[in-house]
Amino acid sequence: MFENKDNATTPIASLGEFGLIDHLTKHFKIQHKTTVKGIGDDAAVISPAASKQLVVTTDMLVEGVHFDLSYMPLKHLGYKAVMVNLSDVYAMNATAKQITVSVAVSNRFPVEAMEELYAGIQTAANLYKIDVIGGDTTSSTSGLIISVTAIGEADPKNITYRNGAKENDLLVVSGDLGAAYLGLQILERERQVFKVNPNAQPDLEKYTYLIERQLKPEARKDIPVLLAELGVQPTSMIDISDGLSSEIIHICKSSQVGCNLYEDKIPLDPQVISTCEEFNMDSTTIALSGGEDYELLFTVSTEDFPK
View 1 (cartoon, rainbow, N blue to C red):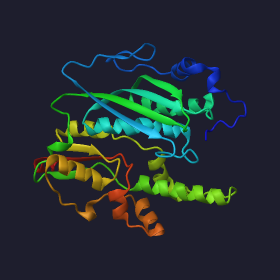
View 2: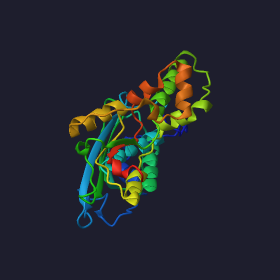
View 3: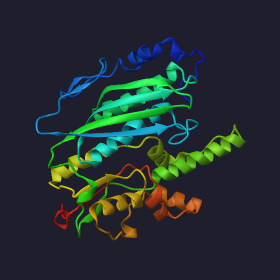
View 4: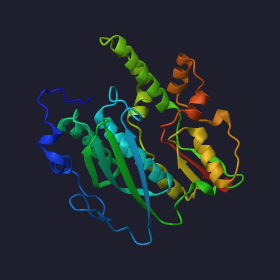
């Protein structure tokens, strides 16, 4: 469940709710001038930059539904919980600035387990230059639940919605698809093998990219920056959390347009292709329906194609 195998663990009850919060968040540093007050008061205070609008999103991860701790390290889980939310901010063509983190945890988790979870959160916050400005902890009777709220900002004219796609726009995806889903299938396969034979040692070397895409996804912070540098304003944008096909449908329905999708243009990593062949799966189906890729899908006018 967590990396610390030392038998000497600390019950959460020994610290209490506020003691636990202080313990877990004492190393978080404020990085943005827009964060007036972070952790430590009844509410955080944010002063957005002049002429900017705020973008706010929330996602919840529930044990047994969104993750399985038999193969998901807690540090990776904390990191992924942040990425899931940052991806939504970047999908609005905005810059992520702050997050809040709320956790419901059962008594089977010691303080040391929560330290690993928050180490992943802090790693993500440092790497993506995000301020952790608040949250909550409470007890749970049904395992571990994590809810993250992300706050970003953008110039109003740059904010990109799902409903702006126009006829003859080009549909663009920021990276390869299907790897995260295949990573999940491999981990689930190994979990079943372990249940039958606990002494079995998994050989995952040839699946490293797929497993990394599942356990430690990266939000595409670089895409809004790149689009701005190129002088490209996307007409619509969405993040790919549920599979390419469903996200295309969201854009088309919101924009009241249709689209032509060219199978040979769908980006696939060689590891996806080889693993699909090994598992007798159709790689196009996996790319369309797999989910959890957290790439960005956007539309641009044909005039921007040369850029």
